[in-house]
Length: 276
Ligand code: DGL
Image (cartoon, rainbow, N blue to C red):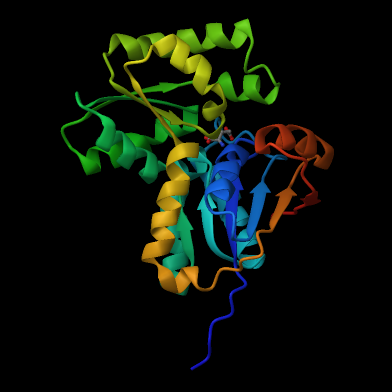
């Protein structure tokens, strides 16, 4: 019997920098594996783009990561997970059967929210595209048809975080404007349905008070990935264990290094990626 070599990477894709927050938590929880992170910063943000475009960009990104020896790809971007993931999973399943594993971030967040809610009133904040896709509503009601889901698109938050303004008066005012309609709906659980919002968790907590549960993907996804790898031991056995991480960006390398190191928590070496 030919033994499978342990050499494959875990690929993490985001439209830009926000996924680095999730990547950091994954690497912290599972430091033994090798990672390749790809940020499509040249074309970010995805949050206001059409479904066709998000699908085309995500497909290119997933292909790039599989070409870079990834045994599993995580689309850490909510917008990509909402608008493109299912279609891409189906496309890959048709071509490769169950060999190519592509996971998203929506289902882990939805499962955690369902587990956490008492009243069944769940709020979701996300990009315009994610909200328009209704993907969170679909996943949450699939898990429990009796829940009520209230969504709020927050298009101003990603630009504010990327401008480094997460702790400013301006951002707190914008957050209040977005969160108050959800508070009026008496939600008991709030899903941060966008990569960048984890960075705003403290400010969000200050506005919504201590009674509402916050579901943050940076906390949920690493736990779910660990479980997934335990369950899929065949795949897990193919993963390399040199604790390495490579970063790729389609955009300005210097900007990625600067903003990325703030989100990832240490200096990054970044290579240029070309997606087609
Ligand atoms: N990564 C995106 C998400 O999680 C936010 C940034 C964007 O709009 O591309 O939805």
